Image 1 (spheres, rainbow, N blue to C red):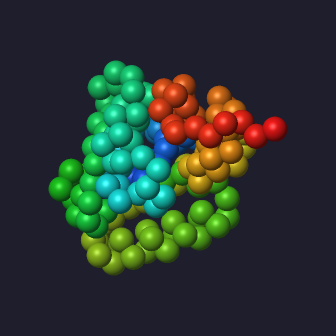
Image 2: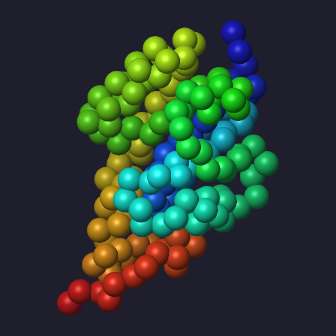
Length: 164
């Protein structure tokens, strides 16, 4: 059996933008695993921020953490995981719909790369509603982001005037 402190997991996503929920999953993963590589998809779902900006903001949000590497990626996740020599992929689960989606992806990834493992961490209840999509909506309407994203992200997002 592998010592969990020796396990290298990959935490992939678009992180457009990174939220407090994403950071909570990462923080909890660091208590379980020795190393985490955050892979930020170059083609994000919404295109709010360019990839290089998302990488920079994620790095700024976590500060100096020697056990975390943040980098962009393109292509198949299984190829990136194999190239990094990682043991597993880490995904946060906020609701049953997330689980169903991730379960399907894990199955296909396992077919593409035998031995591919997925690790799911459940979102804390107080952060389960926080998603990048929700943050983009709040941003568009000028809402308060302080309980949704780290301060560096709140400052970097293009903001609308608060609605009255």
